[in-house]
Image (cartoon, rainbow, N blue to C red; front, side, top):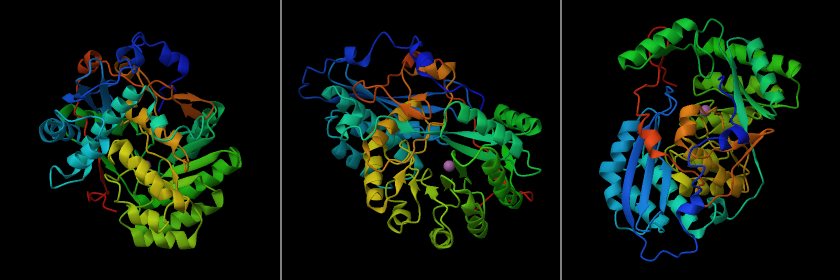
Length: 446
Ligand code: CO
């Protein structure tokens, strides 16, 4: 929460590969003949030693000297399974193939395991897809957004999170972000009496317990009771509208932690505060409840980060039960899937709000920006990250923040390189996600 926002100067000051711009590594004036995939390498790294900071990176090397692509196959919670999926089950089908045939290879790998889809398979597919687009952009000598139709906009509206143990703490955090130029802020408050929660600071006791679980290599657990949370949220928004005004966009992520009836109550109670959107108010399977919420209030709804394929959220879109699609490029099948999702949303007026937390790598954040630049129905791009020194040592680029918006440079491909030596110095660390439990030990299930 306290990590500084990355600014252009601080990132350009990095020694990482800055003297080896991508364009210098491969001459785009050459038209490679008989281009073939020669190797697929997987690197799992945790550059900043963060709990959700293991990144699964895929490098596809071609027969053309200096021509390779990077993709992000990170699925936090299943990192090592994805790495094995790539190395053992998908990569062999790519060797010797033409990397320019992205659609052909995508379909090949999608059907290859027969028992297809799901988080592990689709995250692996996402990494390969991004790496192939990276290669195609380098061959063309163009940034990937040019291959997707070019820029619809010059910069991308973004937001960041202010989480607090109390309503006043959230207000302070929101003000600080607004002073830095944010036009939209995500606000999260702890439920009264709760020592932890989603996107709020944990108490010292819970922090110590969490660290002890990490040390033992087991998942930490978090106590969760939804009713106090449902009751405090309208108070948070009433307070914020009174204190920080009605010019700032406010959004909130429920993270699927309420029951269907609580979700209806909550969406109705928050209607008067004009949210930018209410996110993950329920698991996407509760289509009937989404329909009820739509009929009862105008609170904009966002959903999609848990999807691991293009068509899982089909009915939420075609029944127009949501307003923002939150699909994550590292889990739905990469750039190829994300642009299809955006196209599917376009006639419904559903906008994109691709999921961009710190638990996907800068490769995904760059790739998200290429898609967000190019689609007509862009809404907002999450970039909720303050990178540490480790990430800056491993990755050559990142979106840069300025005055409420992010942008990326115009180097060919995805425009990001990975320093493999630095990555291997910072290996995988098992930090399992917390299990969420009711006071009687029932695992949270809605
Ligand atoms: Co979310």
